[in-house]
Image (cartoon, rainbow, N blue to C red; front, top):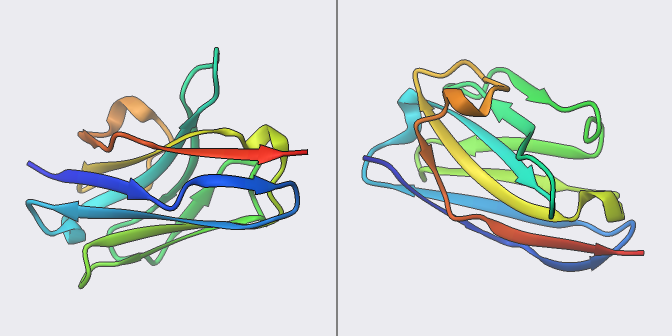
Length: 124
């Protein structure tokens, strides 16, 4: 079992930045592909970003490319999502997810473990 806890969400003005963290426990995440997803009110959960086990490859939704950066520290069992140039449409609950032996999957059904989410609100 892997437990995931997100932190770092909050309220920010458009154009601002936030840094989300995902702390894992229970098992080392070095064998897990990690992803970030988000869900806005009334909408389906959607892919934001993913990173391979070693961190050598990263993937982004077109809507966040060049604004968000995903990274991981396997020694600290953490994954980070740096979000810059935030827009009101980025407002959502952001979830961290883990897939054993994952390769940076965009499909949320591929993930085995999920955190509870952290709220990000971007005001205009």
